[in-house]
Amino acid sequence: MARGGMEARAQTQVKTPVVGKHVYGELYGVDEKLLQDEGRLRQIVIEAAHIANMHLVEVNLWRFKGGDKEGVSVIALVLESHIAIHTWPTYKFATVDVYTCGEHSDPMSAFRYIVSQLSPKRFTVNYSDRSYK
Image (cartoon, rainbow, N blue to C red; front, side, top):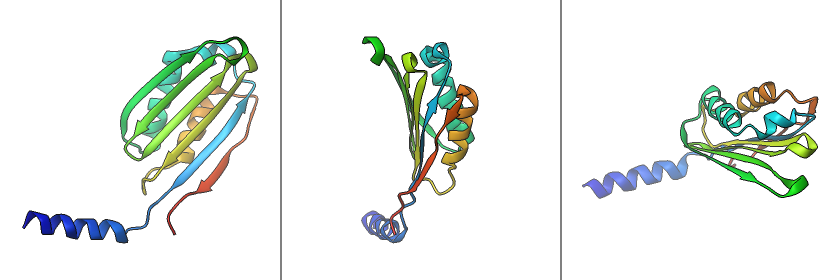
């Protein structure tokens, strides 16, 4: 009997379309110190997930060293997908990636929040609908 319930649920899931909303961009002219502040970047990603109605699973952070290529990467795994910030302090540059498969998640609000906190001199933003159609 339990198996039949699982089969019915699996069939329902197959019929439901897959939502995919991807917002990403580049930030130029960001304060170098902020782009190296691991704690602040981590908090920005956590708050962005909350603002976008995403459910945080885990946040990981890495610092890379290597001259002009050094920087910080913060990646939040959320139930709906991920949020990532990658920084290049030497160039005052960062990339931001927010992807969700959650119907009620708003990746653009997360992106806007991250931009507001990093205060770039200029930025680009792109949107891609990656839903199953």
